[in-house]
Length: 237
Image 1: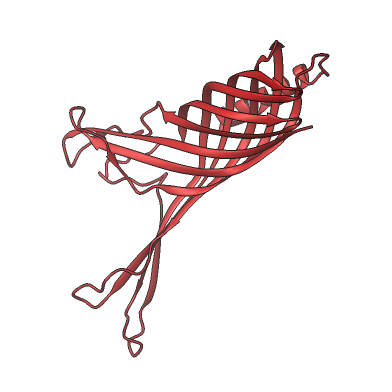
Image 2 (image 1 turned 45 degrees about the horizontal axis):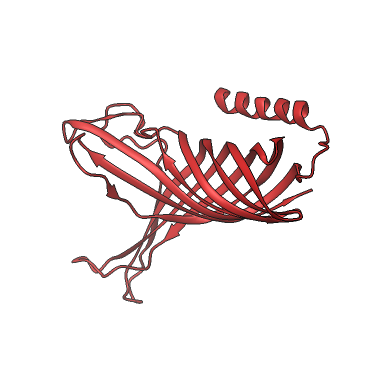
C-alpha cells in the first residue's frame, strides 16, 4: 500500500508540474477515458513448460489522462485508471451427489500508464496515433465465489464460498501465492478528430505475478502473467 501511495503522489506532482497550457497546434491537456478491456491470464508450472491460457476476464476501464506534446506531435501520455474485471459461469452438470456448481470471479485494479506517443497529422486537427510504454498496475481485490445447488426443488441446497485470491495459499507454506503488483508493456494505435480520440492496444505482462514462486506440490517454480487488450474512447479538454 505504501508503494501505491507513492505512485499516486508522484502522479499528482507530475500533473501539477506539467499542467501548463501549450502553444502548439496539437491538442494537449487533461482528459477522461472509458473503454472495454479483456484480461488474458496465463500460467505454467516449470520453466520448460508452455504457458496455458486461463479463463479470460472482461470488464471496463475508466480514468484520467494527461497529454504532453514535446515536438511536432511527439509527446507522452500518463494518467490514472480504475478497472473492473469479471466472469460468470453457467450452472454445470450435476455430479454424483446431484449437486450443480457455478463460479463468479471479480477483480479491481488501479494502474498508472506512462506512454510515449506520436501523432501523425492527416488533416487539420485530425491525427493518426502510435503509442507504446509501461503500465504500472496494482490489484486492489481479486475474489472467486463458488455457488452450489441441488436441481431437485424438493431438496434445499443453496451454498456459496468466496475465496480471496490475493491471500490464497495453495501449497500451505504460509505465503500468499499471488502478488498484487504487475508491470505491463503497452503498444497501440489510435485516431483523433479535434478533441475526441479512439484508441486500441495490447498490453504484455512482464512480471511473474506469483509471489510464492515455488509450487511445493509440483516441486517446480510457478509462473503466471496477465496480458490485456483494450478499446478506449478519450476526450481531451
